Length: 189
Image 1: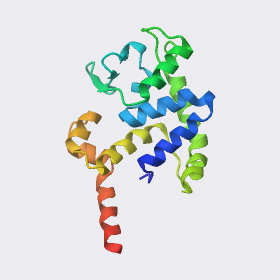
Image 2: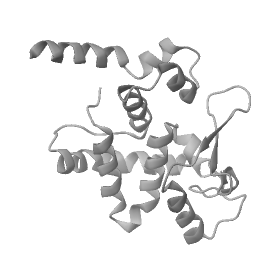
Image 3: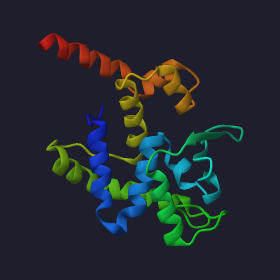
Image 4: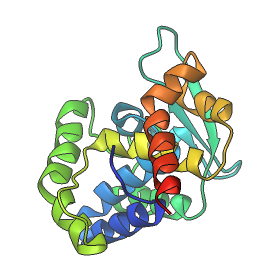
């Protein structure tokens, strides 16, 4: 289990954003974290999946047999970040926000490699926590854990993750481990 708070994740994201050449990585990880989506669901976002008028973003859910879409509200300030990518890259409606043509695997590998090489150092600088590194999928799991710890209903979190059962969500998010640790820490005092 990775012990990082929502605030620490946000600080990590902003640390990545400080270097303008990593703005695209910052936005990719930010979308992954705030929407709890898989890498391929972010990598395959098209400009046409973003509706600035209705303030919605549509994700194509991976790992489903049928074509499944999830329509979510655009979270504050993400719209400005997305617009910046669209303008800077001069993208049209049918263009992907992140990948060029069908170069999804190379792009996802680039996102993973950056985190593998840099996350431990960045996390240590921000939090003074040692030996914590992230991969892209950790953003998805951490978001669910943070939503749960903030008191959100596990059944609603299950719907966000498109899991078949609450038990699957509890296992995936390592909720039992979190609750056992909370109980043990309470007993310390």
